[in-house]
Length: 380
Ligand code: GDP
Ligand code: MN
Image (tube, rainbow, N blue to C red; front, top):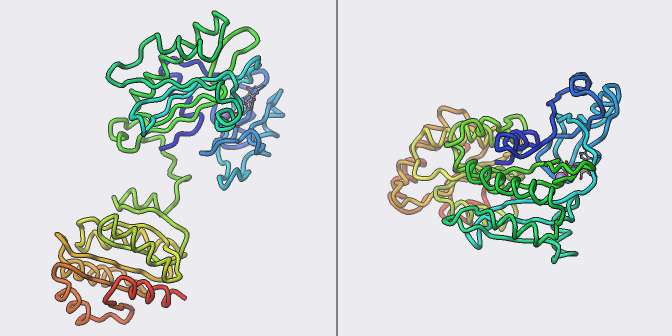
């Protein structure tokens, strides 16, 4: 789960990483209020779950509450790479002498957290890695050894940061970032830029914070930060109902049992000339409630023109899935064409049940490819 800048900064603050004081604002009037509250010049920052806001016009300085209100009016509603701005973070403006970059990310290939530090901050890190690879210091932390102060020193000397006051502050921030990362079960904590003010103070001017979804149950306070409005409506319903669902942008609603089979069904749908509207894994649950829940999620997407069930009975029995499909169609009054392919355990019995009930919009096909072709045809 990705957090907004202001949420990441709240966590930074909790772990003692210095940030600027700020307020959340949802309207130009609130931005004015926030600026009045904070006093002096502020920076008005679009809160969207994507980077490069500065370049896209989503970050503006304001010298007065009047200006903050005007800048807020410009930024709210702005579309930044497909993300519409609905929230602003108004914080006390900083004077910047230097912009550094510090991050800690989970490196899957090494199975270890990886620190990266460079004095070439403020720009995208990929650019630094490509153009000035020597300026980027990388250091893995062995999770069994944990963070040790020498690691911070190695990073700081490696990046050629030689001011003793900066060294001291950054060493503290590095250690605190490691604690924040581990204690929040983060996958990424990035500070870009980590600034040095003209007075020599170091603080985080931005935050990119990603928490492992699988650990959210341990962190109800972080789980609560999820922005329901920003999430895709279908994915929000799916999460609520516990349906394994990923939205895609086609018109064929796909359901199957087992992630591998569903992935193949997406491919076969594409092969048949259609575009899948989603990934949905019924898992072991072929029972009526599981099918109803999945269909409710899938059919709430107005782009869906046909439904394609691809079920291979292993432990799940096809007759049970067939009953589930019939019960769901009965309960939900689905008008869309429904194509079903059943194979494996009790497939014959399943097909017999479907043929007997024979709702007018139900089509049974013998193979996966036939089923995909039929669904694509019926979606036209
Ligand atoms: P991003 O573009 O989404 O990464 O957003 P950032 O929060 O990193 O801001 C982008 C840039 O705006 C920074 O690199 C700074 O140069 C500038 N900026 C942000 N906040 C301030 C501030 O308080 N004062 C000044 N002078 N510049 C700022
Ligand atoms: Mn940034």
